[in-house]
Length: 457
Image (cartoon, rainbow, N blue to C red; front, side, top):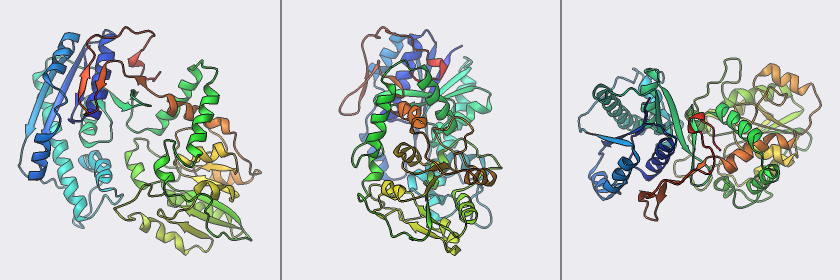
């Protein structure tokens, strides 16, 4: 059965990944069709000029090469200036977060505005209007395409499942019972394939499978080198958030109490996740911290190290109000996102470190300086272990045992995955201007690449 690859954005990022996967699938004997969705979402005269001046990534020569490779291509365009106002707001002005289109657009709206307040505000309402309009256009195109195209696609691919148009593609074909694969960027110029958009559970499974299947005798040493890079003052793939840290700087801590530091994550990141938190587990970071405060008791002081802003922040602190109700507790203090505190030095001064899905949890485990518990979903825990503390009963069980550091080797599969993930590009070439081209000849594979296995090399 033929495979459909849907590309709803005209960007080199989306097209480079889509073309590379299309060529890989074709080289493995699959029948492939590319659907190019071009939507004019014009918000102002400036937008019109920007679009007219932009790169046209799929030039005639690229389409011609696709045809030579046996990859079929079709383009659907939709331009409209009509006003479509969905009834997604209640009488109180708040968004109906259960609405299908709101769910599809929420992550893109939050990312565009850099806010987790996706249920209110004039800017939020305006952005939702535009994003839902885009989603509706994509849905109309897909309905029209399905009526006119006589081929039956059992498998559909699209790029990056968190953007509105891509998410609409995924939801549309999921509703039709089709298998949908998400194409994501890998390490360097490479791609990875996913069953779910932004799934921590799937990433944990993939990293462990990749680790177990890797025969490289140096994989452990290389993974340790990668983690050391994350802990260094400069460099590493977490460099953005280290830029606002002052080496060795920690706040004043109570001297007569044990210290538990809770490392929070951004609420926006949870909007991206496709994983659902089980009902018996902590449903929010705030719920987890309250349980820590009430269970640890008066002999402990809890420091909440809020997720840093990173390299500057133009949007203010919109998540501060989420933590305000916790200020009624006496044994708690907060480190704000813009404070230049050294998160790693703080962990070394703590008796216990906790986190809720943030990648700093992996860094702290590797440091091996203090006991670390994971109170939310993570990308590196593969089994039920004592340090997976997802609810009150698990916290009580953990605290009845002597506190001890974790084996740093437990996060090496995660480090190995981030360092090496993805199938390297062989077909797509991207020049300095961002234009894309395809190699004149398909390179011969030197090793087996089973793309449909959904597993990176």
